[in-house]
Image 1: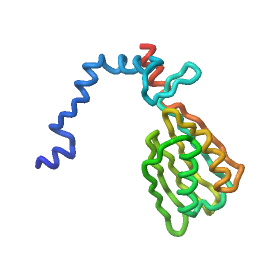
Image 2: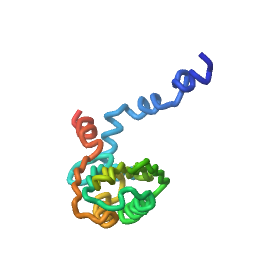
Image 3: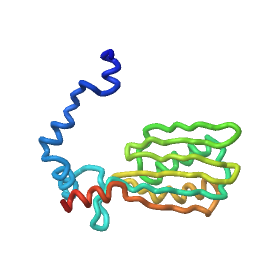
Length: 168
């Protein structure tokens, strides 16, 4: 194998990550430090829980305009604004004959979508950490796609992992 192939495989690379884990006391010590209230990380502390972020799975049904890249990008920008997030990049792709997939990369994580406009359906993910307020995105989607038929499921990302590590 050439050095380039070994590099792609990650062989022979020293990242220092293992040394950092060892020096900091390992995963349990890292997670325990996350529950300290004076930390300035982007973990969320709510109702006695500590988790990485709020991930909303949002089902938009009987929506209009779900085949329009511009409308979707505008909705992404509005969600970022009202949720108090930081936009880094938007990329969308229009399929033929219909449908759009896209992602807005945020400093706080991401917003993504895949649409089936022929049935008025859009599958959105809104995942945000820190002080961002992802639930505010729901009203933006209702307005942007002219529907009140929206269902939301909330996942607290990392909640189980943090709880297990703290209990250990």
